[in-house]
Length: 488
Image (tube, rainbow, N blue to C red; front, top):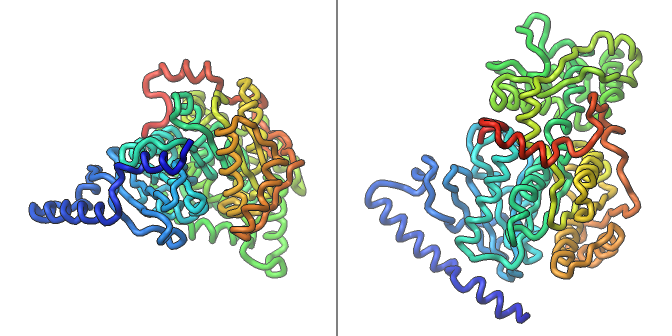
C-alpha cells in the first residue's frame, strides 16, 4: 500500500493549524459578542470541540496539540504528529486522582510523560476522566469517548492501540474487554506497570498495611480520636491531610529520618511493618496514603459505606512476635454486595480477543510485578492467554520506564498486529537497541524472568486463589442487577 497516499486521505479533512486558529478566533469573537466564553461553557460540561493548545515542551514543533472537554465533563488532550503514521494511541491514566472534578492538566501532563509515542509517529488521545475518585468502568468509558472524539475530528486511524499505566493498566484492560471485541475499534493494547489484579484482590496488601500499621502505631486513629473500622481507610468527614498522615507515620516509624536518628521502638515498628507487608520502605508512605484516602473514597463515596475488604483467615508473619500480632490485629469480613460492586467495576474476566503486550519493572515498588502473574492467570483461566506477551525489565520505578523501552513496546505491538507474528520476550528485548540509539535511555529487559504467583506476594483470602476473580458468566449475571457496580 502507498502509505504517503493513505496518509493524505486520512488527514485530508483536518484543518491546518492556521485554519483552526482562524476558525477558533471567529468563534471566540462571536461568543464574546454575546458574553459567553468557551471556558464558561466547559465549566457547565458543555463542549465546543477540540481547540488548538500548546504542546508539551518535548513536542513543540513536532506535533499539533488540541484540548477540550467532552459531553460528560472530562477534559482531554489530543496530538497529531507532523509525521503521523496514521495510527492512534489512546491513553488511560493512572491514579485514581481524588479531586471532585476532572483535572484539565492531567491529560496534557501524561502526553508529555509519554511524548515518546508521538515522537514515534503515533497520534495521541488521552482523557482526564469526568471526575476524580475510583471508577474503572467510568474511566474506561471516558477513554473510549476520547477515541471517538479523535475519530470525529481526524477520521478513523489505520490502527488504534490502547495504552494504560498503573491503575490506567486496569482501565485499559477493561477497555480491551468492554470495547475491544467490537470490529476494528481497538487493534491491540499496551499495559505498562499495570494494576492488573483488579479491585477485589489487587489492594489486599494495602488492607494488610492498614491493619498492621495500626497494630504497631495506634495513631491512625489515636485512642483519643473518634474510632472507626480500619476498612474505611478514614472516617467520613475527617480533615486529615497527607501532611498529617506523614507526621503520624514519622512519629511511629521515623521513616523519613536516617536510621541512626530513629529510636529503637521506631526502628522495630518500621522493620516489623515492612517485613509483614512486603512493602518497600521507599513507598511505604504512598501505600499508606492509598490505604487511607483512596479507601475512604471507595468506601464512603462509591460503595455507600459498605465494606469490600477483608482479612479473616490471613496469617501474618515476619514480625518479631507473630503470635501477638495475629492475636491483636483488627479483623473484618467484607460485605458481599460491596465485593460484588467493586469486582464488577474493576475485576477482569480475561475475555481478550486482541493482542496485548505488557511491560513491567521487576522492582516496581507500587504495582508489584506479581500483578502480571494475576493477569496471566486471568487470561489462562479464560482460555485467552494466547493473546498475551509479557516483558519485564530490571528497573526500579513505577511511574516512568525507559523511553527506548516504550518505543520498543509500541513498535513490537504494531508489528504483531500488522504482520500477525506474535513476538517473544526475547525478540522484544533484542529490538530495543535500535531504539536506544535514538533515545539513549537504556534497555533493561530480562527476557528470562517470570514472576511468582500473586499469592507469593499477597496473602490470599479464603477462596482467593483461582483466576479470573470475576468470570465472564458472573459479569453477565451481575450486569442484570439494577445499580450494580460503581456509579460514574
